[in-house]
Length: 607
Image (cartoon, rainbow, N blue to C red; front, side):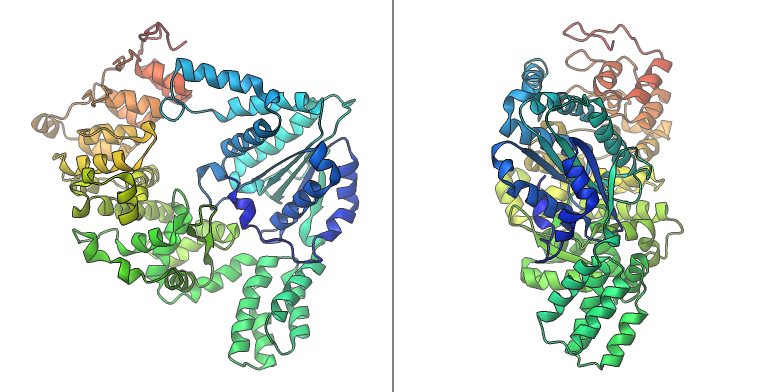
């Protein structure tokens, strides 16, 4: 979860020093209880500045002896925990446990109790974000009794609008709840764009980066130009700096064009004209890059993966994601591509750069894997908000383009998993499978997420009946066997011999379920039952209730599903929904006369 901090560029020598002398920063640092908001435009260098402040605080002599320095870097292009409050809370609590375990004795007690009563956390239960916030909030006064706290949180906006606002208010509320006479300091610093945090957040110190970093942008530009011989370097630096208006990302992309023209020995006049012709705002600059893409069909496929993949993909995963088409006619992976076609990592990196017109790159993760991502969060935001429509002429609205993207990604994953290569997957160990077929883990675990997202945006899922050759269960079982090999979390496994109805209920595929249930005659002929049981003795309604799919539940109840069906532990759909906290599902079940007093094997009820 902390790998994002390593990806952020270190400050160029001589830059960011202004922060330590800034009146607002000094006032915040001197205040006993302060909240500092480093705000700015996308690409203005907020993350680099916060990382600089964090490193300076850690390097202070007091930090090694007394100060508790905590940090988290949100990453909108990272995995689920890197872009969610749950990841923030888990990371901060882990850092506290490593340094002051006694401050979280209540967390340890709760964990041990849950393990005794419910089971393994990877198999039977997961922490709720509000639970962890409670433990974090409660630990602060205990810590402050002995040590000052310095908390740095980067890119708050990358966890989503609602969560960003909620976290900012949580930080403010935490500070307000502490006694004003506190003898120890607590300082919280977060970086975020101007939006969505309310501009009038009371009592918060604020620094606007683009208003302060003109000299830093100039130093960055001059360093880049000094790395190679560039004619008129000083004039170019002045022009780029003035037009960048404090935005490093604009300067970076423009410099790449300047250096390309320099390699072509273009005249100073042509270089100057090029710089002046480039749009000053980032969205227009990104649009200009899109219009330069030569193979827009292939580029769109790459952009789909970079925008909507559940987690960042490695270079070799991206290769196979592009090699297997959404309507792939082939039956084996050999017909789609080969490791020889992949070439080297350098070859694939060049392909990524070419298809994205420089808007994507390969970076080395903490596991030493080369992953592919956009060069900045603002690039992803541009494509999700408007750029997809430029490349996808078949979509009329943004939601239609996003729904279509998830549809295509899910079908690529399904085609990959259903290849003949995986007919006898039980002969492979997990390691052998992952080594020989790098995309198999993502394909097996990711197709349901993409299908659900596509379904929720109104894209028909009827073709899944044909893809899985329903009512035959052979291909569905093939996927279940693959999934059993590649996942370690029991919550994510799908038992073999599950029906398509159960799969639709488990993953919230309302459109697919509707297609199956709409023909009563067909249901009778094929023996499809709305209360069919899986190998784990779960009905579709039990599955949908646990995972919170109200639309699926409404369909099942309309077809006569038993509202009080019990699982192997005696839990009803209402008990499962209550356990998970799905309020909408609870209301729906109660409206359909679910038994509030039904008890499980332990004698517990939904109440």
